[in-house]
Image 1 (cartoon, helix red, strand yellow):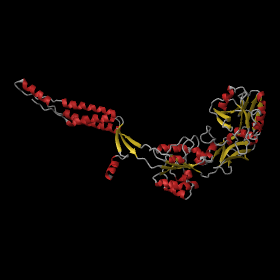
Image 2 (cartoon, rainbow, N blue to C red):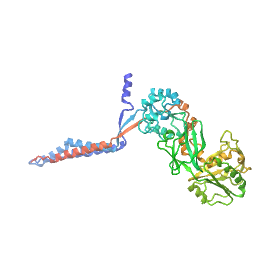
Image 3 (tube, rainbow, N blue to C red):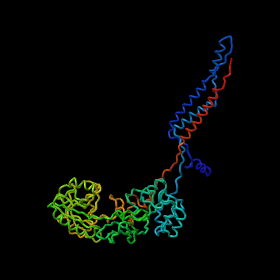
Image 4 (tube, rainbow, N blue to C red):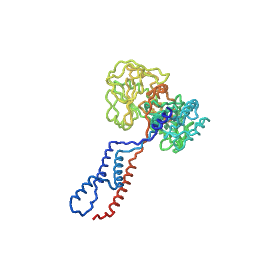
Length: 561
């Protein structure tokens, strides 16, 4: 029984090479072998001339040759038959197929987790997988194998693991989800164990469902960053919006420094140095954000924020409340506020950053073009009578008193669009939505600031909410899966930790993945196309056939007289 078992393993080992044909039906071309065989069988040499006294002897000799057909020039016959056979096999698409044995698995580690306390706690799991045959690799382009030096660095608590990688593949700007999808394709059929930091800066874009064979562990790395988010000239000062981020929160504060000269250096505390060039703060060479990304330049604003409020008589009260709320945002703006109100439709040629269109008339086409081309942002409120619907505005901070919504836009007037909800009520319905159009956007308030519609006008949080709209540099980075992208600088620096529930929102939880039975993954195969070799062999056979045929034709035929 043991001998028979090993014999079966020897003969049917999955990694043994196999010769296969892509088009077996093309072997019908082998019927062409009948042609040279028939030629050779019916190829008769001239008969001997024998002087006889009667013709019956000649007729008898001819009949005897027909009854005893024998092939001649056997080597020529074999060459021609082999040539046709090789061509027929080449047409059938011969390939040399070798099944690649399935590996035990891969452990993919992000360089940023090496040397962290969280990875030290995960180290026994990684060592257990290695003993089971898992290969240890970096989660970087090409997925190189992890060296022993990197393992020793982790044991010594060294966090600068990027220098241990060969070449320039230490860090990558691609998101972790994109790298994991690439690894799932590169190691098809193998289970993957992935360990990455839990920082939001590595999870930009949508999180697609993960294969069941991927187990992803996010680790807190305890990184804190500080950067310049926005800048503006205000008098003789340069105002800087400083951002700080750790795994718990992202915060901003304004600070003022003396206005630097052109090409002068700006060195905010705790951040890389910048140089003032061509109206923007350019980070010095070598300044990097988190995950090795280059710091973006910061545009220094010099023009005031231009806001126009247009209202018709029916929206006069809304305009008064809105004007007070916008004026209250002035101390928090990076640049001076240039606010104007009008009861006549303003021309679209007026340079405007924000237009508050408080009217039941539709937005003119020229203003819609200004939104798309000039980047103007337009605020609109609900038109018509609306419907009674009591709800509360969902607060954006713990100390905010929720505002009450008494009337809303009619459901039948809500057009289906790709607008993203910025303010929502307790039922998850949009109170303020944003629809991007070209370089600008249109904001729709699905209620009104009129006291008969809501008490938003009396809410102390209204100026704070308006400030987040008028000065979007302080907008928090959006979580994975949301439709609008975050600011570039904030996305590169955000160190807040991702909730693991978001990572596995579209897939099974890690424990459920481990418990669920997994079907065996198909074996990967490696195929080598043999057609070029068969064509070369056919060329050699043809050359040999021509050489042998010429030699045969050049031989003198014996005279049989």
